[in-house]
Amino acid sequence: MARAQDAGNLRRMVQGGATPRILDLYSIARRFSRYDAHGDRPLFNDSRLNTGFLVKHTVRPHERPYLISDNPVATKIIVPVTVSNLNMGGHAFFVEERGFEPRFREFFGVDNDTSVYSEDLARVRELADMPSFDPFLLSHRFRQHERPVAECYFDISEDELQRMEKYVAEQITDMVTLAFGQTGGIGDAERAQTFARHILAGEEAEKFERLRHALSMTAEQYHEAIFGWKGLLYYRWRIDQVRDSLKRFIIEINDVIVLGVAQHERIAIDDIRRHILAETRKRWTSLMGIMADYESEFAAFTQRGDAGAVRRFLLKAPGYFAQLGYDLAAVSHITSYWAYWWRDREPGKLSARDAMEIFPGFLRSLIRDKHDDEEERMAS
Image (cartoon, rainbow, N blue to C red):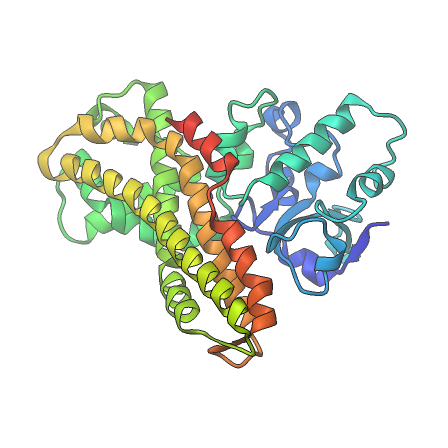
């Protein structure tokens, strides 16, 4: 049977959309179920699944024996007892748990191998295979999928929208000033914040037609470019969010003292540690490379008035979402797990047993695998 999920934890799952860690289908359904697209192109066929929550969950030591995967992050499905009252709690499954498929089948009452059930199970496994639920990685995977889903599933969560707004406004002030003319003073900042709000909400009001003309775009190109721009701004914001914790991780994992280690274990641990640091830097360099390209093209427009440069890059932007999403997820997972691990532990010292438990998982999370290669080939 599915494990119970208490009401307090379930209410904390409500994010208002997609975040890297939580895909809140409950809120998406509440906001968009009256629109045809939500019903015509759902993420899942089963209404209970399509109003639940999917979570990228940091695996606790007591949970590991029940999972078939030794990755540090597992995917949890949470189905509310009733969507009309989350206080009733819910039922939770790990996709990676032993015996997941028969439990899943029993819970949803599937007697035969119906195509509807098979499609949902395939999509569950596809989502579990993704490193993150960030909305732009979801859009890259499912926007042009053989079973495409509605664009409402790619909305940034309300909480993240609010936290991003000021940051985005600061990033785009120069472009807004160039596109709409100079007004000077606080007016520019207010106008940039208004424009940031419209970009992040996916609203392309007629009063922003001037920007479309400044970029020499058709309406369709402009729609795609705004989506690409929103994604780049989202990743840039998230990169800034993780920067300090990544610095701490690199310093701490390099300096941590491993206790009670035999000579052959020390060689193995130090070798894994070197590989972790090398792969971390490789992921970060990849992220910085794309952002440097964006900033160069952005500067060509804002400083030299070269609309063609930023136009070309914004139209190409969705092709970078897979690489950005995979690299950022890998970096975020290891830094968050490292911070989680040190709660209630003596900092700076790690037993050999603990090192051999968590270091290989970090390395597996960081090494670029076939999924990364496939996504980058699709993006190129």
